[in-house]
Length: 257
Image (cartoon, helix red, strand yellow):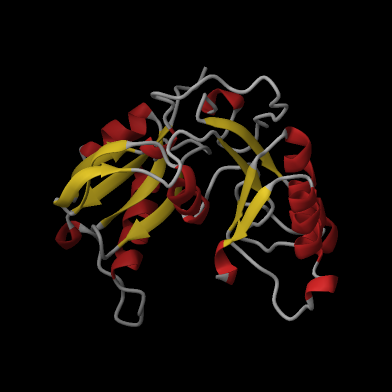
């Protein structure tokens, strides 16, 4: 049975890494690639070991998936400074401290996907769904990098926490203006619906998300996007949100202020 591998962020001494040839213009990342190739060649690396990223500005080093024996060998290799096991980034804005029970009329779900399962939901985050049938139909060969409700660029986390983030004590801007931060409605429950992707996004998926949100029982919709170049009577998202309004749901478009 193979030992469990983990992802590590590895800090290196650049001066001890192999020097790229003069013809190479990549610079520091190339040094780390050469170092990695040399390391793989001198260790019994498994097929699960792989280099993820190289870093040349914030740190000198790289991130990689390593088994315990590979990590031990790496620590004994020239140029190694230190390593830190990769950890998920969680937002304190979605903790459920002080939250009331989930309303009995709520019928939403937390759908499992890449790097996300229903255990991530609580009395604050009470729903998580994602929609990509339109994306896949329009691009059958598309490779979805994060096939789940999980945020990949911080935009969804930012906008939803601005609207309804829970109280976070000790928030600051580089230690300035320290205090308690919250969204506009810190005790509101949150349900996330993800119809837009790094790869692209289609209105068919957006209105599917809105349709389901109405069925689930939301009271407010906060949408941080908009379609350009369409009159309102032909805009499928505008038509969908108008239907939501007719059912007593308040909505706002943050990109159409």
